Length: 433
Image (cartoon, rainbow, N blue to C red; front, side):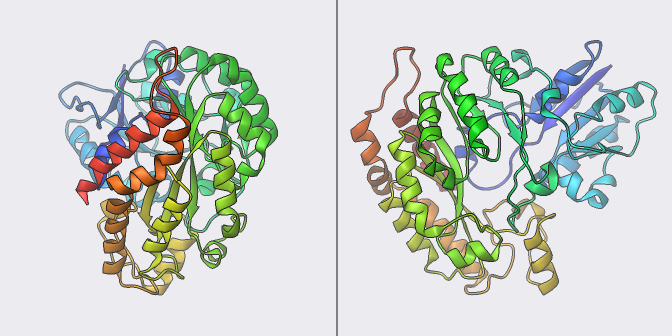
């Protein structure tokens, strides 16, 4: 038997920058690791490899985010026209089952680890079911060990995870809906074995908040220090106040952390149930992160109920004044499975029907205090201005004075080199806007 697992090509603006941070979604290597050895499994990331439509497969599995669903459906149609069975997994089919099921033979909803053996068993008997969903979330001690060959050599870095879930439940987010409302921890010994298997590249921890549990993070980082790796991840900015954990993160090789700042308005944050975030503390938490020697990759969203057309200039000034090394700017969009979607749908404010535009880079609904055109124009302006030569020089001047670009004694790029390179990549990407 042969199984093909596909990650569809990304769509939308800014693809040049995305390619500079390319890695195949972790779900696909996990499924490959769970598959019995007598079955051949091939992983194709369409962002850097073509799909082998002409070959025979007993099953094609596609991981699908909402904004790539049209291309995923086209891929499914191509294979099914040849009599090949297709299954969807990921956020889109999990949260939009009725939309997804018409285009495939099967939907694997939510976490797939508990049901993958059942899928394989049914496939062998030619009795693939239309819907699979585990009765409970997986204990992360049962996450399989992934051999290096399961990952693509073309990936810029390796994905790895230590936790799943998030205790926060922001209105615009569907992570809690998918992964649960509390942290689940992977045994640290398992994480260390996986890191040692994948040596040779930098790592990105896909956890939604790698410092969400400070005690666990403290022990993990201490264990990682002797490996002398380089890594980045995601965290909630308020965790920067734990200076011991931040110091250990830096000592273990952390170069930068992605964080959802989202809005500088406390009223906006309160309105979407992001109550833990304190806007008056953002500058202090950013300074604490920098003091630990870690860069900030900040995420900002526009189109909140309290936003007007001046929000873009205020946000740019904040980023430059606080030396935020890297940033992602998004138009708030109503994601299926989120409270925000339900609100806007009830109010009749969603006007966009092209799902490929629900990726944060287009205006898809009518904001309250600016027009949809002003939202899209402002988004284009801040991308281009933030990644201008003038802004890059201003934001990275502190970092470059403290640590000039270069490599360590193992030939690994230091934090300044990595963040400077990513700024250049994003500068190229904004030409798409």
